[in-house]
Image (cartoon, rainbow, N blue to C red; front, side, top):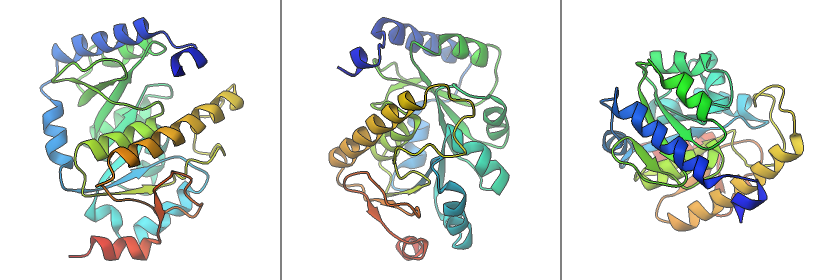
Length: 247
């Protein structure tokens, strides 16, 4: 139903997934198992590019939350984290924006989790060909171990949440990721169809809520100023988050 509504081509998605696998298998020593081991039983912060992202990061920095957690940036949020000096462990992206911040994040140690789908096949080829960046792949249609993992989700944000929960994070904090339909100023510039963007955000919110139901053993908290609209996600203050992280 989602494929029909957004006019997605499952065969092109499959092609993109196998292209990712081919390019990664010919050059990458990085495997999904190593990423899963990094996340297992660790607290994670996922940074989105919502309306309150910048002020939410103030709370993270004031209480040094980033120092006690793995930091996962949704694509649009990566430039903001780089500017604010927060080390990025992983960036979740489908390559639909500028690649400059992805390259910089990778140079500083981040693993890039590149999602393959039918609309970004040229970007996959251009970005990965000849690249020596640390990259793993994700797919919405097929699992191709050890380089490409089937990740349920539709937006970079809800895919990041699936990754954290499915890899066994001890707890997850959402920053700048309230999943409202407002398009934050840190989102990609020049988005030509705000209505479609909001429809995708609404679907991402639904899928994030489903992820929380599926991985109910993983506590997920929002530490954003804006109320979190994801079902099952509790809004808390940065001070509360600090107490949860304290031994």
